[in-house]
Image (cartoon, rainbow, N blue to C red; front, side, top):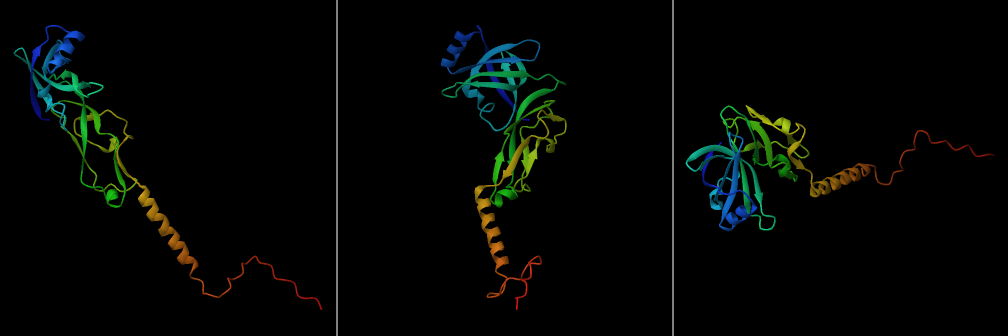
Length: 221
């Protein structure tokens, strides 16, 4: 997992009024928890480029008032209307202590089922995992090249040494679904086969009688 840096300043006051005033100035109120003490600080929203606006999960080295903290992002809150970042929660990383984070899922290759007309469905774009920070990957890569129509990769199929995935094993992460186009292609093929089978009878002949047909009685004299 890659480590990025974030520089912040301690908050003099903690409250809604102070937080709104910081946001007007382009700052994001933040908190670090999970260690000995909670640390309330704020940072420039532009500094979150490699923390929020990235496809990977990164470890963050945060400097506040001359002190450094190793942490991972736990939750980010956004404005309901403009989707702007308004708050960030960080979990302090303690040596030898496991952490729980969300790791993004990335697919590798093109599935065989997609080549055959199926549709790739990524049902879970992030997975909640638990492990030592040194064991956690920046992303979970899934090779889907051999995935055929109707098949999927479930949580139980994913193995990462030293990492526990905190979802039921039978939950599907990515699958290839059959599409309407594939169904429409299969239906005419079945109909054509049935027609060809019927057409094997010799033209002009009368179909043979079934074994249970009754023989008509002889004419009376």
